Image 1 (cartoon, protein in one colour):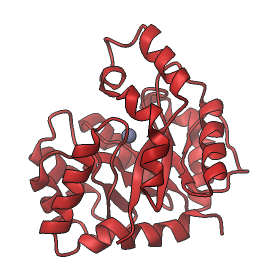
Image 2: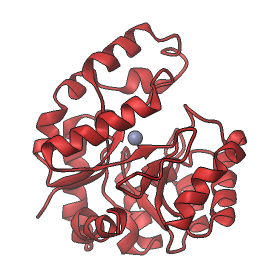
Image 3: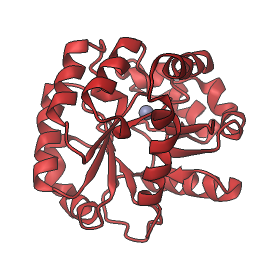
Length: 254
Ligand SMILES: [Zn+2]
């Protein structure tokens, strides 16, 4: 079976070390302590183990969005593999080769969404994809709003939309709210396998995606969850392989 990953982050090792070390936000945001710098240093080895992947820039409050987007794009070009995911910046970049974006609320606030309206409109007009994490009730409402205002955007909800505690009940609410065909869900950072089983029952199996959230998880956890999917889900091949292939055809510029 091919190995795909729909949610991993790549970054410049030196830049990331410097930010983590010096950041004034390192106590405030879990993202800074959760990242494994050693895995960034060895990201090429992980990438080599994959057949293909969606590559998202590593996000900190200090990053320059354009620099990180360019880094990912060049990285993928150099290894002839990977689909770069563009972090939403402040202006529309219509020169993009791939129709996939990432919204991150460490960089933007959802209350400012109207400022980014032209970008969402652009993604909507081309039927593009937006990766977003819906981790609490406020964001759940925000995501509903975005999906209503922009009816042609396809969403990939990261981490099954889990909250900080990965509550079954919250995940269930998210899955039930966005049960329509424009919503895909990735299983990155899900540690309780029961939640993946729940998702496979509620969401059509052609819309569940395997993702790791490398380098925020250990290689062992990445392997464990993959093996559980393989061992316990009848539709493992869809989640690990087929759905990625279908999505790739839609995301690469037509
Ligand atoms: Zn992530």
